[in-house]
Length: 360
Image (cartoon, rainbow, N blue to C red):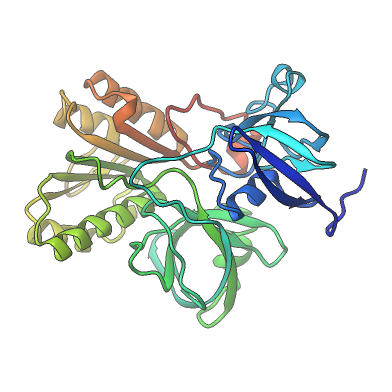
């Protein structure tokens, strides 16, 4: 059965009873997010399973769903991954609609902009700043889908704060033979080029109403959404005149030259007595502490209760840090997580039971 780029079908989202239109070449998740229906989602590429929902009525194309994220037994029972499922007729789904008090969720939109900055900030890591033609509303920690020249897209977390609505800053690590990185960002993309993207996406975002100290724990370019959170806290203090809670940021890398923006973090720590920056280098001796983030966290916080933690990075780091936090008596209700997946992770069947959040 071929898809039609013009034919649309009605998607009914229960228990809301909301009806919306979805093209045959459009994922059901995309149609929902663009119409302000905030279904749970993370990777948006059929890998993690966060957007799993029950199809109550109607025929769909299941799309490129990872067999590790959607088991055959689940499919037989009517489940599908909304991020890759597309309609073939009118469809009714049972969605776990996200409504969180105190948080505004912004509909996904398409944007274009001009590359203003493209700098190498660490070996094989570039900072891409895009000046948008129209401002974008988002929550600190969310991500965008950057459109590639070949029509595909890739997710990257936003590193700037939400009050900087006219631009997005992305931290992009080179992937060997990667279509987005080796084949474009690190090869042909240049300042002044026009790019397109969509967003915002994701449930990994800062909850400013959680009145507790913050643990920000990242590895590699998983630092990006944590920077957005930190800059948001700084903006809150600048506006209100104070920030009452401690904020501790860990950044884990293999080699010391991967600690990008270190001088800026150290400057912030000097200027704001509530902020502590704790770099972690795991594979060489360095000017500072050596070891992985979970191990250093265990040393520093034998008891972590009373904090709110945000974790972002590769799946192994996130999972190990989650375990370390729970061993230190911090439980899932106070932990938000975001896992970075790439093509290799998917091919190898990487899939982690998520509690409560993940992304790519």
